[in-house]
Length: 165
Image (cartoon, rainbow, N blue to C red; front, side, top):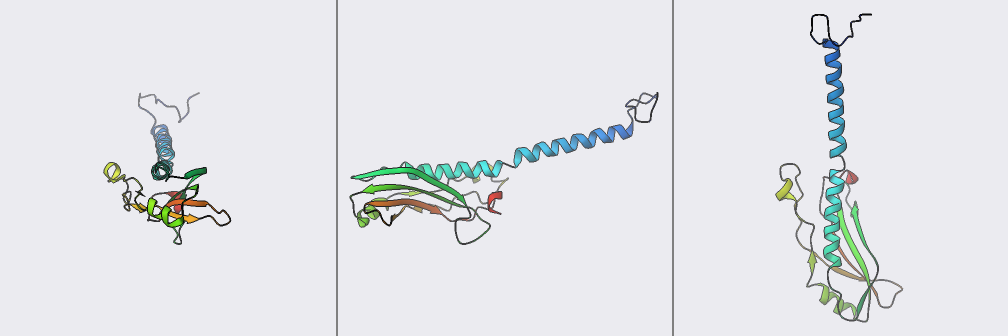
């Protein structure tokens, strides 16, 4: 049984309809694979930057008479008052016998920043630099006499992550 959809025609040439069909399938598959591979890239990139930001904060040695308690917290997303951008936030909690001014004085000598990626991906992504050093802040935990939260916040504009659109 001979049909018009045979791959090889009697003259030895490949059927044009079959050739176009397989070419379209190939293009759809390649486009889908590239989309799937590229889709999590901003997610992975911003998670790397968030973890680096939070690790810088967690690696600050605690002042004397101070103990870290509980897990550290790290967040990325629309955390500020504006929309359509990504913010980086990291915190940990401490219990200390030091006063609030002593803690402020101790932590003012430290700062953290989101790592710069422009040197690596400058042609692919814009705005992956750093907003510079961010100060370490301390605030009292209400209801806990000696409890404080030590945190850093980078409210800059990071347009590359689909979680912030």
